[in-house]
Length: 281
Image (cartoon, rainbow, N blue to C red; front, side):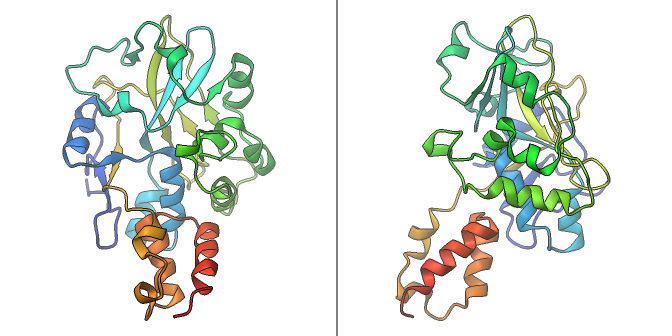
């Protein structure tokens, strides 16, 4: 089996494992040991957008595989659910950790003290019921808006470009789907638990659906993560937005940096390029 090639040159992204699949509890410590962060649902949306026109091998690796993420699916046994963005608890997984039916049990009272976006029991049934969605339904889906880190749905420190979901949805539906992007929520256990959200293939009829039904242990061994290298500083700081720094660089060069190195969406890149254009170079 060949390794998944997720980069053109610089290895900003690395699959864990690079060949085949394995238990999340085995691969997470290896990812963390390399000083990487597990890619989030929003991170996968941006990466698929950024690499949609890459070489065939790289494009196929991103669009034609499923991946587990660093975002946790936290279930209270009463039907309420929270999306644990960049879950610290998932990052602390090891093969020795005690699990419940392959899932990470919550500590007493942990659900109510977790300050993360929540879906009520009604909302969980409405937005994460396995229904295949039309484009407008995707944009109106609270869970997908949280996955994409819409500023209106998540804490400020996690917020991304508000146009990310719309842009990613456009990529998905450009593959010829009438409906896509279903969210399959597993049934709650008898005790509150934490799982890992995964995102499935974008191509070949799978429609980039999302789910949380995978185990964290080795009983199914189907886990695959992507570790991203330490996040680049905010692009305004990285470029310093000064004529001395950006002089001599074309808009195309700056745009590529913003998309591939910093992870900006097309709309956010365009916004920054317009801002850069106001500087005298």
